[in-house]
Amino acid sequence: MRSSRRGAVDAFIVMDVMEAARQAEDAGRHIIHMEVGQPGTPAPEGARAALASALQTDPLGYTVALGLPALRARIARLYGDWYDVDLDPARVVVTPGSSGAFILAFTALFDAGDRVGIGAPGYPSYRQILKALDLEPVILETRDENRLQPVPGDLAGQDLAGLMVASPANPTGTMLGRDALGALIGACAETGTAFISDEIYHGIEYEAKAVSALEITNDAYVINSFSKYFSMTGWRVGWMVVPPDHVRQVERLAQNLFICPPHAAQVVALAAMDCTDELQANMAVYAKNRQLMLDGLPKAGFDRIAPPDGAFYVYVDVSHLTDDSRAFARCILDEAGVAVTPGLDFDEARGGGTLRFSYARSTADIEEGLARLARFMGRG
Image 1 (cartoon, rainbow, N blue to C red):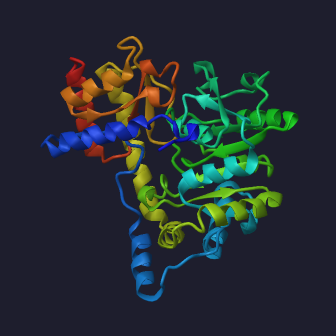
Image 2: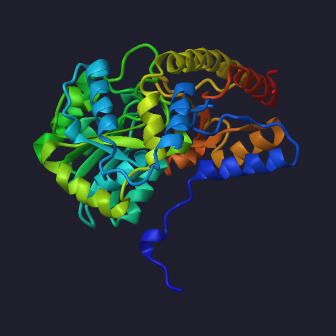
Image 3: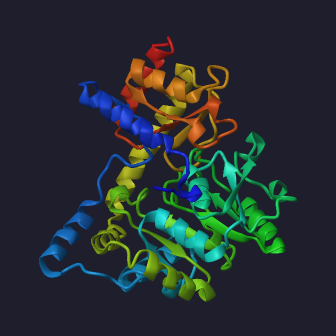
């Protein structure tokens, strides 16, 4: 049977690493997971209890396409609490994970063939979703001196219909300050370039609060998710904030593409937003793990590190050790029993010399993983 060019996207390498780690575990090995970008904790206890209660009284059928009104209102309130932004709940679109938000945003904003800028290193699914929608991802190679984030000069001569940025970023954990984010938003406004801000790691910051694009402009698409800070990866629920005059177009797309986000996940998400004590306890674990990584990775020989301002990743330059990060990651898995992600997932041109280490799991796992890495590198 014939297949489309749009379906010819690359594999998500980290998922392949997860499968290799699973196979090793099935064979009886104990694997430390530093590859996967998800919390090691479940959805908050209060959120799970709320769903258990709802299951007794609510059929959990379709919701309206834009999501439960109570959840949209609670998300809008979060922007007041976190950023002092007065947000109209009508602009909030609840989505099937941030992935659903990317599909809605790219479909609402761009026509086939449009060029959309994304920084490298960056989340690989951006470019694959763009390709699947017959859009052209334009890779902007970021530089160390810019904290591996795009800057306005990177946009010159690119003729972009849109730009997507992430702060805190995956895989680097670096953040854009208010001035840097504002400069990018301003540069896009001057050329009529749509601006999309991926903010799914907001809430997971360490020394400074992440800045939302909504603090600077209303003329942007802002994407977030319950997966990371709210510890709900498998529930597949996220959200997007769009300009007022885009709501109806996005609603029509959501109706047809998804009908609605999963009702049960929305119930959990609404309750999770008020589980502050448990969520902040998770943050204390991430902060401790981050310091362990910043101390332990250099001692193990991984000392060329991007500054991890947020999220739960450390991105490491290993180009002095290998030019094949995929083979190197496999060697670390096979010999050390630690799963890490090759940089090729995030940067096709330069990722052969980088690795991403996640520290979202338990502190005991991070300590054991660092000890194994040190032995693997001959320093343990």
